[in-house]
Amino acid sequence: MAVLVIAEHDNASLKDATAKTVTAAAKVGGDIDVLVAGKGASAAAESAGKIDGVRAVIHVDHDLLEYQMPEAMEATVVALMDGYDAVLSPDGKTHQAYMPRVAARLDTQQISSVTGIEGDTFERPIYAGNAVAYVKSGDPKKVVTVRTTAFAPAGEGGSASVKSESADIGDTGSAFVSEELSKSDRPELTGAKIVVSGGRGMGSGENFSLLEGIADKLGAAMGASRAAVDAGYVPNDWQVGQTGKAVAPELYLAVGISGAIQHLAGMKDSKVIAAINKDEEAPIFSVADYGLVADLFKALPELEAELAKVGY
Amino acid sequence: MKVLVPVKRVLDYNVKARVKPDQSGVDLSNVKMSMNPFDEIAVEEAVRMQEKSVATETIAVSIGPAKAQETIRTALAMGVDRGVHVTTDEDLEPLAVAKILKAVAEAEGAELILMGKQAIDNDYGATGGMLSAMLGWPIGQYANTIETKEGALTVKREIDGGLQTVELRLPAVVTTDLRLNEPRYASLPNIMKAKRKPIEAKTPADYGVDTAPRLTVVKVTEPKTREAGVKVEDAAALVDKLKNEAGVI
Ligand SMILES: Cc1cc2nc3c(=O)[nH]c(=O)nc-3n(C[C@H](O)[C@H](O)[C@H](O)COP(=O)(O)OP(=O)(O)OC[C@H]3O[C@@H](n4cnc5c(N)ncnc54)[C@H](O)[C@@H]3O)c2cc1C
Ligand SMILES: Nc1ncnc2c1ncn2[C@@H]1O[C@H](COP(=O)(O)O)[C@@H](O)[C@H]1O
Figure (cartoon, rainbow over the protein chains, first blue to last red):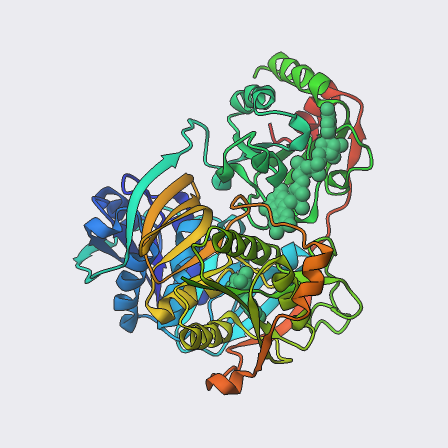
């Protein structure tokens, strides 16, 4: 058995999601190689070699891989698959965009966003996490995306060698035009220890500054409900939920969020959930360890002051 | 440009799924079913393209049981021209769905396939990508905005770090994200009109597609439940709990 893990990186550095996917790959069993496909990503490839349990790193450098577009990633990954029985990637949007293309080329049914692997059985949430399916695959080559919040990162201490391989990508029919990335010095949402999220109850984008002060004190990432994103309060990549990002921090603070099933799907695996909502009947309180029934415009400044008192 | 819109009939997004006691799946008897919300967004976008004369014809296709016809009727009532219903009582996996959709797209000579990024029942998010690869077409996943040009599309995509704009040569597949548009409600006259729009009946066998599942479902269980915790008096009490009881700050 050999398993290919696809690295998450931004060309500059390797992301934690890679080491978490390696942990998932170890549960599948067999030798683990990591593919770093990008442009000028050799530092990321070096870091991938240091992950415990990795046999080799395959580094593919190509202009067309700078943005890891689906067509180029498909060509790169499929060309390597002769040597592997399974390919695993994190389940971020970058990967979810191309993994189905890989699966189709291998004539395989993809297993998406798995949260557990036990022998040859994969566990995955369905119906916004209201049910959990356990499935076995009969396909000779398995294509799996991994919900990285469900796996601890593999340790460091490996010394796998980096092999450079070329890719034959050809005409993809798609071209990168531009990117507007939301800039932030805060930790990344999906890997953060603390997430502070706001919903429609925040009332406006400006009011999110009430939350940002708290997030900055706690070194937290910012998240949001769909309603807050749809209303234009905050960028789309802040959305937590069934169809946004899945998070599982030590602490999730939900403010002005009602707790719709689609939102809960993305955060109910958090270790501790705290909620501030003025409606004591809000469904968020049914999953919250600590609930504060209050007007957020009063509670948030108080919370910030209380945090300051204990040294934040 | 002919636009194909695959639409799936799913458990309504407002209904909480219930696992069957024998753990064989989710109970879908006597519950409200609706068009997958992402597919409604795709239908809306297709109809707008038609209203702007960018689309010459719009076709909704659904693969599913007899009742999937209702889902196609909803698309027709929103303004789609006609439907194709591929009837099956099996719950097909994205791989099989994509193979059927490929055959439909080829038979219809579609140049653009607009579809949901994810079906909210199985949460695979796989069919669009699979279909695009099978056809050898480029794909714009998670569309936030679509602009059409001669022979090409500019798609603004919702990505992990923000927004990304790509240009795709036609023919292409585009999957919808939540911010692409707000789907219209069908008006009563349009619902009446939709009853007379044609729906072609097909089966997977008509397209020669092997629909045998690749995955075996061992069981489907209830998720771990979370107990509601305690209510705290004020912000000071909250900080105290988080620091001294939970130890998370
Ligand atoms: C296909 C589909 C996919 C979806 N995907 C997602 C997803 O990924 N993530 C997601 O979050 N949602 C998703 N949704 C939307 C989801 O169904 C809810 O509509 C959404 O989560 C509601 O957001 P909210 O809680 O911010 O808003 P609301 O439900 O409007 O709740 C606002 C809350 O704020 C409280 N509030 C108001 N003012 C104050 C105040 N001054 N002080 C304190 N509390 C206050 C109110 O009591 C209320 O509980 C999806 C829906 C669909 C159909
Ligand atoms: N049975 C089906 N009939 C028509 N379209 C479907 C069907 N299943 C999936 N699709 C399309 O594929 C998209 C993604 O579905 P999935 O890959 O199952 O998450 C949906 O939003 C639909 O547009």
